[in-house]
Image (cartoon, rainbow, N blue to C red; front, side, top):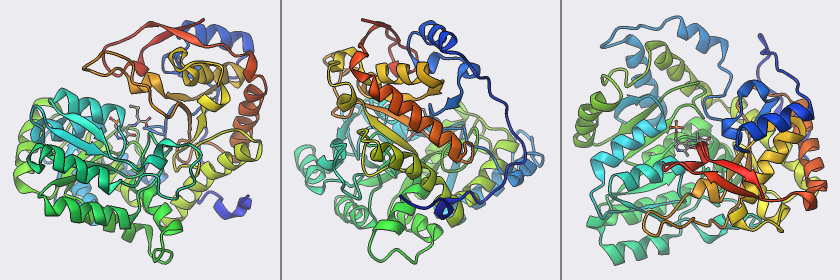
Length: 459
Ligand code: PM9
């Protein structure tokens, strides 16, 4: 295990948010009232909130100071120009369209580039990304390497694209049916797994030959860059900033949920190199988000984002961020608990199908495990399995993903090492009584992104 000093936090705590401690009785009542869906719990009833790393990070004093410099003009806010500069200098993309969060950018790019019947290959699906592709008339195709679907595979770059899968799709459908390839850095649904520069370069060469764009889901690009620095030959001495830039330079545009890497509570953007696509996005953003110089955000939000982008590529920050996740993951590995390996960048993913093998997938093992984790110690996790995968729009049947996972997502700069210890202890307790845990049935299912609002009952 890595020694504590190797990832100690490069900050100190100036303000704290007090948490409510609950009893087992209270938690049982709360999770039943929430339909056994951790998304429906009241945050007040949660002790350690590992639902997501999205918008849950602690901003720095410099970001908070930036909030006070918000220019709340309707048009042409100075914070927009600061953000544009930060995006250009850090990521290299030429044109910026701010959006309220990542899915706002996904909506714009899907509407602009996808025609009915198009195919969008990607290195594993993401829930909102795929839904926007489908709503625009396209179909997602998974081109990630097979190892990504195997929680036990120790492949260092499980976010890599299987180039043969991509070539086959191009042969089958023709390049004109593929408006872009969607490349995520790091791959959320695979367990926070990175793509290598070498693989991305090969994807670039192949797509360039066929005139196909690469749209980069850069939500966690700095975390991906950290893994490249640690694992890819030739990158040890390169800075995170340089690797991030190298990744972005291999792509044509990007959607960003700034609520993750960029350390803000709200915000996102679409970034593009192609003037024509930018022109359309700038036209469309005013319909759905707001004027092109604020895209649904306050000036202060854009300022915090501009500062957060620069903080996100700091070596000490990223080392501590990923180091904390690895610290938790290693404790669970040492206790013999099946998790996705290698440990990902933004969370530890419990392998619910291994932990609860007696619960069939249509009784939602990951959803069940997340509910039991909450009951044990007030730790809120997120299901990333059959519920998140949703239904096939053609057949209406559940999609059964190979990965049936519970994500313990670590917010940035929020929890301490002692919290990580409490989480590990709770997971171990639940694991030790796993044979007594029974599955669930879904009693309410919303049409879109059902994992957010579905309700369950124990069988
Ligand atoms: N990710 C997460 O918890 C937020 C809610 S779950 C739908 O992991 C990627 C890779 C994401 C992501 C959100 C989005 C959408 C796009 N790509 O939530 O709309 O992880 O800002 O971003 C969540 P927004």
